[in-house]
Amino acid sequence: MKPVVSKLPLAVALAGLFSLSLHVASLSLEPTTAASSRRDFLGKAAIAGGSAASGLLTALHPSTASAVSPSDQTICVTGANGYIGLHCVANLLDNGYKVKAALRAVSESKTKYLQKIAAERGASDKLTFTSIDLLDVGSMVEAGRGCDAMLHLASPFTLKTGGGDPIKTIVEPAIAGATNAVEAANVLGLQRVVACGSIFGMVGSGSEKGFDHVYGENDVNGFNTPKGCSYAYSKMAAQEKSISLAAQNGVDLVTLNVGQVCGPAISPEQNNPSWEPFKLLATPPPGGAVLSCCVPGLCDVRDVAQAHVAALGLPASKQRPRRYSVASQKASPTYVDIAKIYAEVLPERKLPEIVEALPPKVQKLVIKGIGLGDKSLGELLEGVTIPEGKTLLVDTNPMLRDLVPRPRTVKQTLKDWFDNQSEYGHIV
Image (cartoon, rainbow, N blue to C red):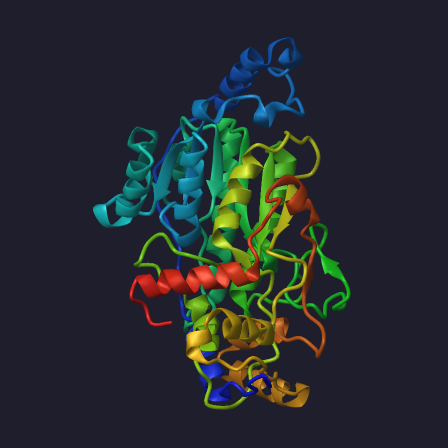
């Protein structure tokens, strides 16, 4: 039987891209004083490790991070009630850690799904809450007090500039949150900070070094600009500032360059605006073509959580702070790839098995038009535009070796996300 061939509606595809709106994942806090949790941690490690850990009180030993049982450690999680945060908390509790959830405000609406996660695991006694202000280093210190390490997930997230100054509303808050997490770790002596960075920390466009280049831990985004796609620029700037500060103060920082995240949401109230293209591609198309774009480093939210928790157990490092790319596969899936996957996993929708991407000249005109309407979206889409037969390549080997040895496939992620959203009654 001949495959169904159709073209997705350009107007529909663009409508989805324009719907990617401001979505701030901020949080809150209060002042504090210094403590010695790193020394406490090293003391526990020396007891647990016996003679092999005898030098831990004076220097970080390569086995430090794994020397203490998770049940003896408390992890501070900023942005704990977010899309990634809920999965991280679930993973931490599954692995025996205690969790101190740092939220902008501690209220029933902010904590109910966290409490549900803990109750389902019989771990309600292992979950506590604190308020946090990412812009106040004293508040960050207080949030991390009594903890052994920190997962820093919270950061402003917006793909449209709105009307304000993006430097003040996006870039500066992102840098402040990332550097304050490192400052707090330094003051408290935390064993490690695992920061949820972005693929935009390492690359804004595959054209930077060419589409045959595999982007990884040594690459830094040089494409995005502060007043272009401010969100992408903010992730690079926050990454570089926090890494520099951590190296200067000897803080063990691991930054995860996470690709675009998809997969099931724990909370039915979460509806990430960056999911709009996935929704559109799961809809029977009357005609048209998809943008010639890729989904940079698409990854499953459950694998992202696993990577964060696994990073807590990495051997301690005296070298420059480390970075890992987190993605489901080396080759970022294209919009055409995703449309093909949906045709396979959603047979009841009678989706076309083959769709076409816009020709390069048309793609350029469309992106230019979008940029005139919103400079941030225009620069973002220009960055993820791909030439025919190419896509953005991401180095996943370090992640496979150290953090997530068997990531979920793109097909599984999309299918699970679709089923999850359908069960919640969302239109997909």
